[in-house]
Structure formats: C-alpha cells, structure tokens
Length: 53
Image 1 (cartoon, rainbow, N blue to C red):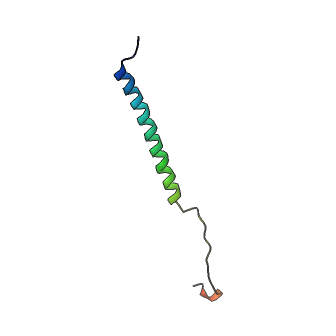
Image 2: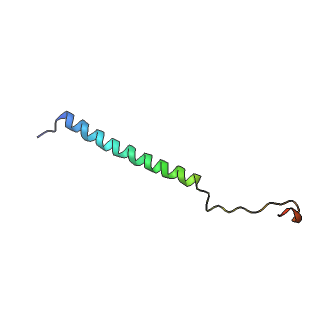
Image 3: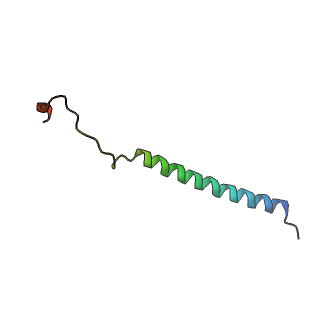
C-alpha cells in the first residue's frame, strides 16, 4: 500500500525538525564553550617588579 502524500510530507517535516533542533543545540553548546574562559590561564604582566601590588 502506498503512503498517502500528506503522511509522507509530515514524516519528512518531523525528520527535518529533529535535525534543526539538534543543530541548534550543538550551536548553543559551541557558543558557550567559546564564552567559557575558566580554563584559560593568564600571566601577570608588569613592567617593573615593584609594580606588583
């Protein structure tokens, strides 16, 4: 039995929606990784030793 065209379109729309949601979640996760600088290390920059207070 052939699937009804409307059912086939609905199936395609659901699959596409899942892919978009997954892509958005990955994109959000990636942006938060860029914003997270807690693991970055910086060094103290001073011109002269007595500048450190």
